Amino acid sequence: MEQKIVRALAFIARCSAAATAAYELASFLGLTESVRAAMSAMIVSQERLHETHSSLRGAHLRHAARA
Image 1 (cartoon, rainbow, N blue to C red):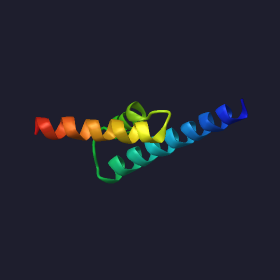
Image 2: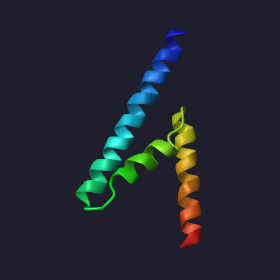
Image 3: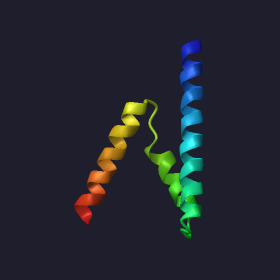
Image 4: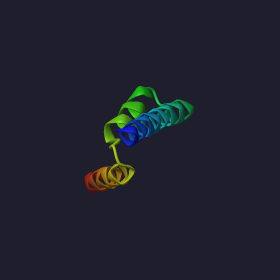
């Protein structure tokens, strides 16, 4: 049970850090709707870090295919 709590807290911290970093970077770059960067960071977040990386790779590949 304790391990589940630790994993949940780590996930919350990772999501919070990713959303904050995305928002701050988008704001720094002068993007008009920086909140979308934060939302995107939250959407692609998965409970396990390797799943998040896999999700990001898939998103990048889909985006590159459209270009």
